[in-house]
Length: 208
Image 1: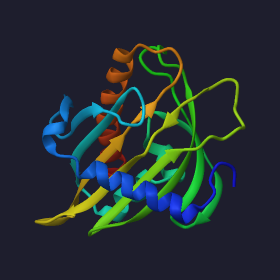
Image 2: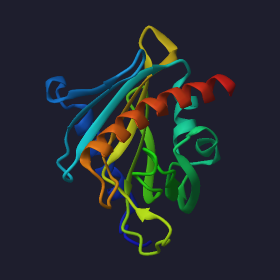
Image 3: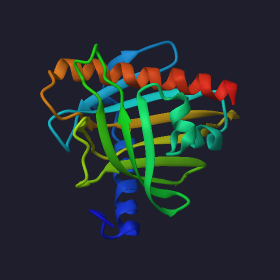
Image 4: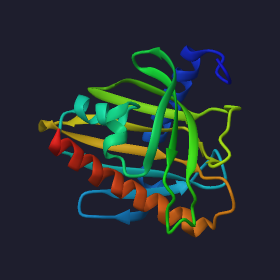
């Protein structure tokens, strides 16, 4: 497969990278945005000249239902307002695939539509699940989109100890949007995208 030599070792390295992020001490993060039910933090990324963002909030549903809405598939396209298309390019096992997706323009199109080709992997983590991904160097490009790049990113979802019907969802995102965009615009867009992600996900789960 293009750009991906060994699926097992690749997915294992990706999972371990996300667990490292999940163990970063609280004092290393700076609050980027806070709403009633979501907090977004950031710290300088070690992967590129941008930020690693962390988002966290409680979702009023069980882990499997939450992750089924986040992982690649038709469900994601129904509720994620940023995503405009999603195609599975290669399927390995039930929990592992390569997907291509496109995103809408943001901030009055200061950030134009983007395209990403990501390896996605979903695996058990403690009592819950981790759905993680990383962009691949995929040669086929579409001229109408700028190709963005997701450095290791993912979503940890675990049941709340005192109420297993609710889940704590923690995300780590570090997206290089590429192109000539002011860093301040990227920061504004990323923080808003993450808080919108939680509110859109909550609405979709209420309807499900």
